[in-house]
Image 1: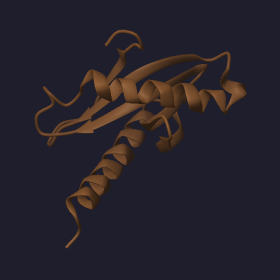
Image 2 (image 1 turned 120 degrees about the vertical axis):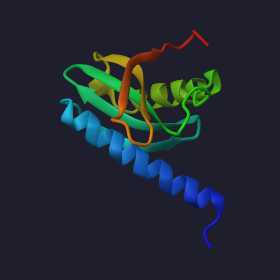
Image 3 (image 1 turned 180 degrees about the vertical axis):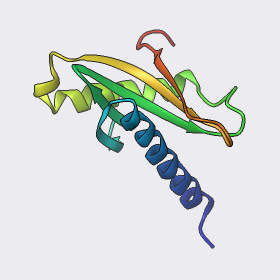
Length: 119
């Protein structure tokens, strides 16, 4: 029997794939999924035009408490590190988005859901 952590990881990857499909349908290109860096993690990195969106994906029945400031604060250093490794995106705008996935509903894309420095 798989451990709880393995099950949660599989669910998270499936949610990220669904969110990536949703973003593609909205005209985004997916640059990376499941980015893990020593300073943090990012579920999805997408590009539309000259904008890079760092996306947190949450799949839960109740999304009221799905996201904390700590979640975003883990993503921000990872986004900076990822961009630092890719100078070709230096002149691009950036945004931190949230995609929520609830059973029986279409994905919900909240653009500019968080800004660094605004816990």
